[in-house]
Length: 264
Image (cartoon, rainbow, N blue to C red):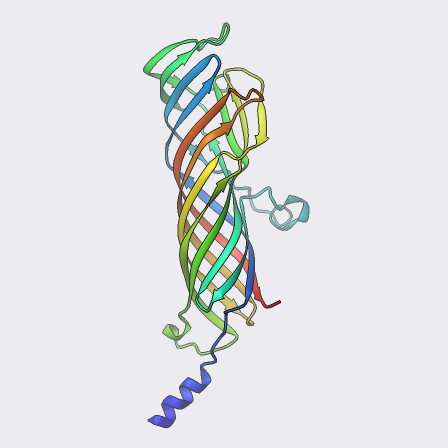
């Protein structure tokens, strides 16, 4: 029995992660909770209640998802990190999500609009309004960029499946992250001039878990599920510094990632 146990342990090569770097690239699909959006400017101050939005993943094609000139057109994730302990990583990356307010939905509105001869001028106390193109078009589509630092744990569970190989591992990874939101917001509000620009707009918090399959010691594929909270108190919606929007919401993100581990 002693010889048998020793033989099995001897065949289980220990994979050493501490001191390695890793990097990955991948794609995400996201869903969002409803959001109260507050718009404020010189001639308006109102809130739209429980606004619904969706992501806009690109239809798959090899050139769109893998072509060098189209890398940021899909919803993508990119990250680089370091194993500072055997089972712990620190990393920085960007989750390039996309967020589009659903056209023509009906929402409740509170506040006041007094913008020249605008059709929507008035005082509102919970009335229903339809978000047609002449009222609002709002998208964080290039994108809803969540630039964040993550602290994740990494555990080899290969032995659960009777696998004892240095060249193939199954790993669980889980942890949390925090960062800033740097969206490019495409907005047309109340018939005013369209605005589309990058701006640091707020912060985000997230937590997630994934299944990582590493092969040939250095390469991996990974499936992640990430949930988080986004708060943007300063969304840029025009060239006028007095105009802004604010909103907060939750998100759930599914990710498919490909990457590698290496030592310098």
